Image (cartoon, rainbow, N blue to C red; front, side, top):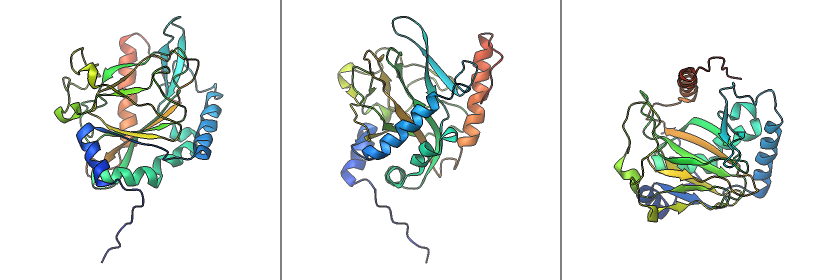
Length: 262
């Protein structure tokens, strides 16, 4: 008889029901202050990797300053290949056990990014994370690990519960589409006010957005995304190959052809 895998950090039935109904779940204090300090220090080290932070590097994402329009570095995507200290959190049982509760089966790492969101950086328009590329997993789910306090002032993520039940709310043509006004009711908005060490889970059909960081504080968050093992198995390498091809095509449309990945 095969051994039964014991999971210590599974979700309780009420938590799982709340996730299924709302499309998101917040778990406070999953990681300790010492562990968050470790990720934060690793994040600071990455900011000193000036050879990586360049507008031609496909790993880097940028935002305009909300007031001055200065180009601000905001994101490493992917990130775990740059930092073993950060990478180990993607396979932590406290994450994987909870994901197994949601999926009813093991989870596979799909995507990883570190968003710094410095003061002044723009937020993101209302959108869903699902992109209708061939084979893109509909079980795509993101785990948000807060490194800094997140609130309205520094542009916390805002989710709209329940709308995930309608599936994809934009045309499925393989392009990114912000959701138009009126897609959701603003009264339904739930700001994810998080403390360092808190973790939020939300699915790829859960509409969400974030406002600009109008504070003098950073809002660093690690975003790690997964898919159910039955929904394509391990796909991270394949995803990033496709993602970088897509980025090159998009940059070329604007005459930017000297991009690279480092």
